[in-house]
Image 1 (cartoon, rainbow, N blue to C red):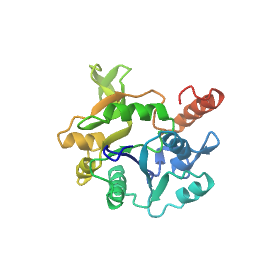
Image 2 (cartoon, helix red, strand yellow; image 1 turned 60 degrees about the horizontal axis):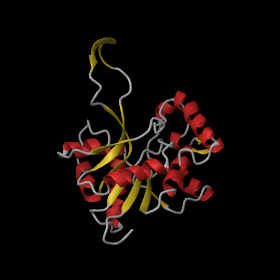
Image 3 (cartoon, rainbow, N blue to C red; image 1 turned 180 degrees about the vertical axis):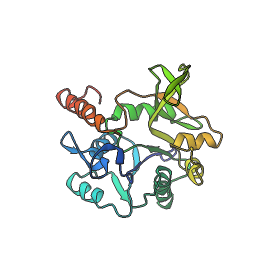
Image 4 (cartoon, one colour; image 1 turned 90 degrees about the horizontal axis):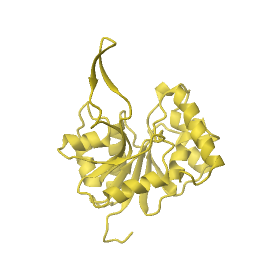
Length: 240
């Protein structure tokens, strides 16, 4: 990248426990298709040219990640023990580390879920291309494909218009300075970086992602993720 143009950096929060995944270690470190889940995520970002700093934000007590980076080297990634009790705190810890390393506040930061291990370089590059010249930044998302219901006491109370509804994914890409300010004092309804930016009055850009870019959350998600990864092994380059 030319020094006259903003650079692109990556922050991947890895301080969560993944309690809903049904595994006895943080889910991002559990084996999926032969290697720890998070390694699939890192390999996708390693396949994108032009990225600057790449941080893995872990808890201070984390012993898994540093060992994994020895076993599965990813030279572009730096382990930062600044994870917090919430996603927002972990992301902010990563942003603070970038600031301390002298990253310009106008540089872009891509925040990605470690458990969205099916992300591809092509999707990341699509986000970069769409947001690089945007005034705000944006996120990968998927138009809601199914009928949307509201409920009261477990029964349908209404069928909602889905035409303007999107499912938020990651990466989410915003300027370092703006995102750090937005996450300094997040409210309880801040669930991702885009919602933090929205709370500050910004309207992030929506870039269509892919249905396979789901977050591995529940036990049943593992089999689907493994099937996708195994299919990619058999057909390399199909979703690169």
